Image 1 (cartoon, rainbow, N blue to C red):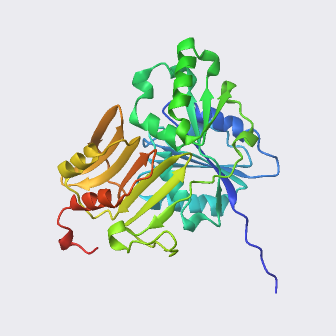
Image 2 (cartoon, rainbow, N blue to C red):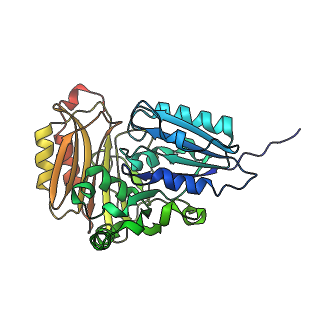
Image 3 (spheres, helix red, strand yellow):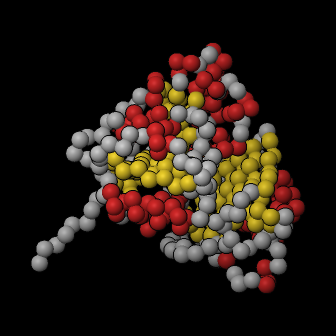
Length: 339
């Protein structure tokens, strides 16, 4: 009997970036480096209903291009993305895959989806790339937009496009940007005319060590010597990450849970000495997103999320039980729902 070896997981590159940053230009240059004997695939996402970017890529032999139109594959239902990706992998059987999300997308959520256990045997995620237009770094109205910052924080590698058009103000803004995002330990590269060697982005995505645990109120307090491996199969749960001297704590709750908007806002505003607070919640006022930094408390209406979630970054350790207790008290009528 002939035994067929399992196909190796293929390298996957997410090329993200804000509107007009130069993602497609970079992608075209990367595709030009394809070895003749290999098949490369591209999954593109456009926010509108009429695809344009696909027409900008030459349909030469060895490329398989598929588009997802009408919305952001990062934060909409995962099902269309899973179907499109599964079909692309089965039909094209690529040796390498590039994914270009819309400029209005959230690449961190896409990366989270593609690192789920379901994809482990098929996909070998590489460092997430975000393209930034260097000639617009001086424009604060552009660089201070929520999505722009969200894409920068998600990246492990930032590619600066149009460096030849950068002014002195742009170069100064770049230095400030590097200092601001230093905690995320990113690499920064300049790309003249979108030129970047494929070897520069061939680095396995490592991720941060994430300890998924049941809610603090739902598990016994363990001593430091206790070791109790926990398998998290469903929400709710919390996690803690530690890297580069920072502590990140987050919570995820079922989508059906609803929270009191004003109590939740008060709780988040009362926190002290944090570096970043981000969240999205189902409230009696509708879905709301929270994006706090020490200079600005921003909250606004949001599209329906896949779950309730919040994440806080601190520079020191903290006992999170008190925060979690107060957070759960913001939930509306918990006794009417199953836990």
